[in-house]
Image (tube, rainbow, N blue to C red; front, side):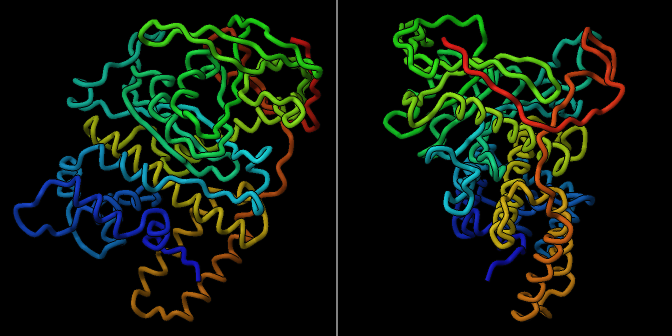
Length: 439
């Protein structure tokens, strides 16, 4: 019998014994018996990220039934190292899709995984301003300092697989270099043009070693490559010269795909892709070019992370270390909802992406409140009835219609650059046409 209770779901992500052992290992030894254990402090903090309102102390009390002030929570978290949260993500973040149940999450036997980064604004406290410089903008300095997060995400389920946060001065490619080895076996990692460079892809291949992990990345037009062999469908095997951080020269062999297309809005565009899938018969060029669009699922994950879970404009933490903890807690919170989303999609026999992340989160929060209020009065029969009613609510309220192919205008709401100003929101439907171009 599945359960949507928060601690039960967290236990399915990180077994309770492992969770408690990790917290004991990284937490400082207390001088006396603490009011709350380190594992309760951390789990309460993750639970807090999924609540629409309330302080950390209030929401943690709802979860564990132990009253402790916000200042005490803050002090306890300041004594916890960021490495603890990194370790929790390393243990708890894993793939959820099954190829027989979720074929839309796979291509050619490979799991579709996205790599991308985003930024978070942090408070202007003395501790943060002393450690994090603000970026320069066209109006002098930015309003807030930034922390950068780079994640690997299972496309289709939006389940985070790995994450690394650091000051925004550390680039996405640098942070991605710390994540490559965490990619699961049998993945097809899809990245945008920022990751489509010879050195970045070579570093990824070096980190993966002999494991069966492939990549598909968009590449800028000005990057040179030597054509080794032209294939019948128009793609080509090319070699790219690469220099590592020590100045040593290497050669990266990839398959280059070029395509010219017309979007739903009638505008033309060009695609240049590099992939490690070299077999043109098993992996046709047009199929790969159309699969590249799956990368935008990662942008939807960022919306869920920053708007649905973390709705505030800035992080609430007061120091750089606790801000990094907060980002990790947000990622773990999205893993909780992703788990429930996959389970709901499986029970309702539909792709997980058709279950609204935000509406599922709101329905789940109502169930958590009911469990808390009823407490020991709930019998196993009541839990089963509540689970069935919960799934019925998800079916009636949280299921999205089939996704339409739409276009989004590349405009801005405010005239702050040479881009056109956005005055309406057109919605066009149809299919993008693609024509392969010989390399």
